[in-house]
View 1: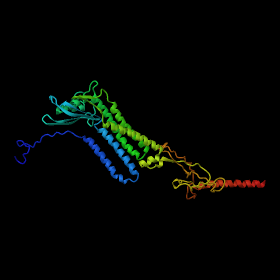
View 2 (view 1 turned 30 degrees about the horizontal axis):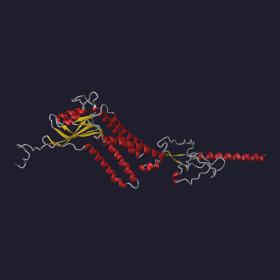
View 3 (view 1 turned 180 degrees about the vertical axis):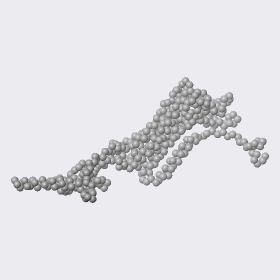
Length: 428
């Protein structure tokens, strides 16, 4: 025997014994969990950079949002919407009378069903019995029911069942998978699971963009974020209702060996239901608090008060002086017109009028509890602009000269009337 002759027969290539191993974990679920953990760890690294109580608020917001994302994705691709597991003695293969004692489990998801068979020892020529097979009825390839039987135009689960027969899978796996291929009379378990899974996965995919919009709106408009948070939870609850409500026909019970397999809802169903309820209730609580205590929600979400959320109550035209010493710098008037003399005499501090001014005592009235996002804040109608003479080299007039001349003319007219009255009294 030479150095390179190990496991070679008659000079042929090296041959190794077959080592069949069953799938122990769902790679897709583990991938989603790993991605979510990386995302959570990334936010955990930047958490020390947030100061004060905002660190706690930021952690609560981010980790709850990531948790909702994980539930949406795991619920959509998870295989534990309905589960069943029994231990029994069962025939191992067709045309063999030997029975084995094994654990048989079935996990039903939105797209497929997983069937596992694990023996408690070695049987039939020291073979290790450990099988995990998946039978699809929807997913990336198709969601159609297809024709009956097992031809090329049949449904996906029927064709995979025929492939499993050709591979020679153990008899218990084929026995359970055959229940999902039947489609006649009132025996339509495969059709009912396909329909309920299709609409449930549509609802969960709808919840995903709603979750994205919820996070965006919480950074801008808290009330809209609460609305979309309740909408996200409602869509998730609708997925649970469709999965449980679109099932028709008799309850699925599979007699196998000496026992009967009965199915119950798994952790994917209950987790999606619980998170949907939490989102609806929490969104309603945030909406209520935002109506009553807007400053509290603004502090928690880190959203500063928007200037557009307030409107100014303009003061009416009043006579007399306006004391602006008590007004704060923030409340200083934006625009104050010039002082116009009154008709009764020269302009004084006690007899003056402001035109088109903004009251320095303006009240900042919050509309967050009433009409926070109404855009119908009408501005007061501006007074018609007086026609002014243009300044030209020939006339030498100033644009405001016409405005200045009007009060003077009125004052002269008032003075002429007073002189005439004095002359009349002197003559009398």
